[in-house]
Image (cartoon, rainbow, N blue to C red):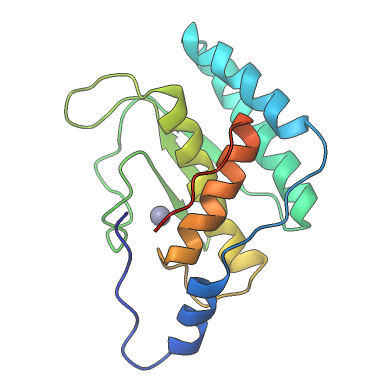
Length: 168
Ligand SMILES: [Zn+2]
């Protein structure tokens, strides 16, 4: 887990708030796990348009639950040449706060292997949590704090129907 260094002066309080916000409300129904299962089947047969549709449905359902504006999704075959540079840890996707666009790619940059479903779904949840940082928590930036990873893990494990391991 690579966490960002705290900002020097401005936004330090917001950074700490992000770090300490370790829980995330989760829907009490099975819609996200249902969509995730459909997404997994689409990925198994490499049905690109169904993968895109599944991601869009996942994000729309999650945005509705958190009462945030919907974000757009682009599913790419491979990692684009330019990714958001300040977030060096984004290996499988990125998020642009201004356009509220999430991009995920289905192949790894180095070995061009198809990303596993677990990695793909956790990337989708990770990028959506950047969206929540701006639109729900109203943080001025979206840092990779310990709290951020806890929130991301909570959403991921809810969607996958797995129990969450605590991060230390
Ligand atoms: Zn990130």
